[in-house]
Amino acid sequence: MSFKRLVLAALSVVVAALMTVSLLGSYLQPQTQGQINLLQTNLSLQAREWQALGDSPARDRLLGDLQGAIQAYEKVLQTPPPQNQPLRLQLGLLYADAGQGDRALKTWQFLLQESQGTIHATAEVLIHLWSEPPQLLPEAEGLIKETLHGWFRDRALQRLYELQQRSDALRALASAEQKRAKAAFYRLALLGTTPLLGSVIGIGLWIIWIYQHLRRRSQNTPSSLPPVTWGWESLWEAMVIWFALFFAINLVLMPLVRALISKGLPLHSAIAQTLYALVSYSTLMVAGLGWLGYFLRPFGQRPWKWLRWQGGLGGALRWGVGGYLAALPLVLISSLISQALLKNQGGGNPLLEIILQSRDYPTFALLYVMVALMAPLFEEILFRGFFFRSVQSYLPLGTAMGLTGVLFAIAHLNLADLLPLTVLGTVLSYIYWRSQNIGAAMILHSIWNSGSFLGLLLLSGGTEAGF
Image 1 (cartoon, one colour):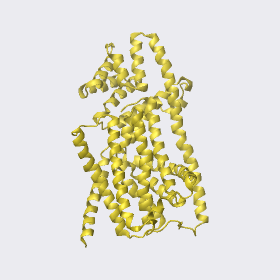
Image 2 (cartoon, one colour; image 1 turned 135 degrees about the vertical axis):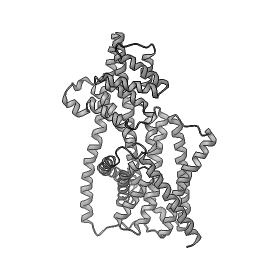
Image 3 (cartoon, one colour; image 1 turned 30 degrees about the vertical axis):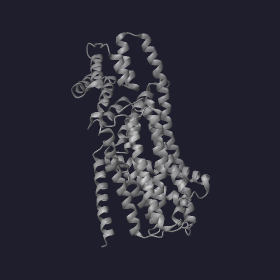
Image 4 (cartoon, helix red, strand yellow; image 1 turned 45 degrees about the vertical axis):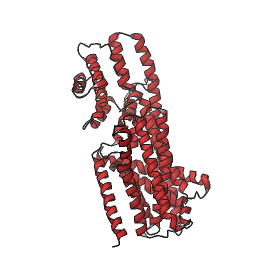
């Protein structure tokens, strides 16, 4: 074995080990989906208060009932990390509203022992409000407004105003709550019907595409793009070095820069975390595209034709939007399977955590640039424009699509998304192959990330919930 092959083999072992450790480590982390489910629960609680819905079994079937909300919170709090202390405040309010006062008091008393700061002070306020006889602390209203959000803040303020016999405040609270409840209902309707309608259209598209494929079996692989002129060993070298750069930047370079600049202090604010993620991803993009350009330089201009937008922007939009609709039912089903298998474990994209914590427009804007512009551009060039086109030259088409999807999913380094992202990555490869237009895959990727991003904003912004 040559020295170069020996180095590549050693590097491959290191990269594979880091991937394995990252994936296994993610299993120990709760899924971000658990927090997303609680956001939806909070939005449903708010929507239930809309008087136009009435008080009927139909409302409970549509929006869930109080006991269902309690079970959702208890499930997430089975293994509570410290940052879930606010969830215990909210669970106590759910118990109190369900007439389970003793359980509510025990939940808040636990927080008196385990928390400090505003969480501790708010727990004390709630204990006094629901004790027998109740007591009013002077800072109660300010703490409730500062610490609690949405439905939970309304319930605590309602209890406070009733004890204070402030009828004007109760009327103002009821009026504002009705406006929020109506808005929450429409947000839920939008979040629920959009994927459903999109999935129905997507299933129809798959029927059409499968029919077209069966009619044109002889035209199995479009030949408008040039084949690769390198072998498996060169492809192995390109991808191993790219993943080595990925880990070197994320595990060594950026932590070192952070330690030098902030002396290793934690990044508490959402904007600080966003700027750190933006610099990290920008560095990865520059390094990754720089390495890919260096690797392809000896092969002339032919490989870069893979990145052309054949058919123009109109063709890319048509295939990108159609691909998004086609991906919806498949990814949604695979996500449900993944959740059932992993039972709320498996981690999640760290950017989702930042999005859930964000409350200002500059942070939203920077996050959107990352997820909807930078990620689709870079990842589609690497995985579809380079890797898929390479393996397509040596493997059957379906195998090349599946392999690209698996590698695309592994690169995100969390088990929770492994199956859904494999499906999405496979669909991205299919859309690129059918359209022969890298822009179609980029647009599909961008729409997908944009939809997830805007969905989170609707959920978190709709309830003013904070985790």
